[in-house]
Length: 280
Ligand SMILES: [Zn+2]
Image: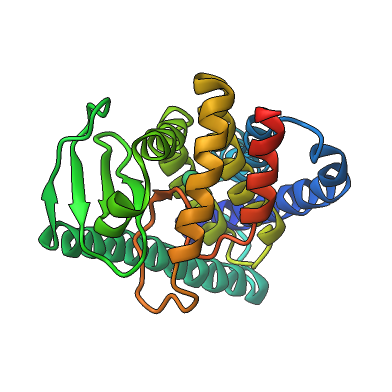
């Protein structure tokens, strides 16, 4: 009984704090997002990432830093009160929510692993000038340029991308990918997904979408700042070319990765415009 009361308290605090803080960050972002359009993309993506992971972080600190020690110190080992219906309901709902979240996290990890395994079967190693990480030439209907993995990143480039882009465009596109690596975007993607799944409630979609757009623009900015106006123009033209050969209907599932163009990227025109302003 002692442990059951403790666990229900732990779950209840974790969920309540996470939910309250998530409501707060979503609300604050709604007000900030208009002003954030004028910020540079990396500041915007960093702030959104913070807003997405802060609620769970605060919830964990409050629960394990304050509630658990307080419970251990002050709650008698043989409490007089019996566990109420409300408490039992909290435990059931929380345990179910947690199990569902863990299932979703493991399933998406497993799926990405399988999809990358499939990619490896239809690709062969390739040397790309200026790229030090392992690179693979991939046969795929989607014009993939993507970095997969967090600690040992690998880059995959689809065959049609090699034939479509000229050398400066390819270099600029790879520089965009280097931007994703230097910002640890794949790690952030996983962290945000875990936070979203653990929240159980479908809250913070505007943050997820905002982050995706900001992270793409930030990687564009990285390339433009590194390579100057030449890179910005080459990257803009690479985006247009790849956008043109992207199939309208994307039926195949793609693994979680940092792409040049996300499968459902709707911000292509905006990104090209951003790059042109860099070049101008
Ligand atoms: Zn990208």
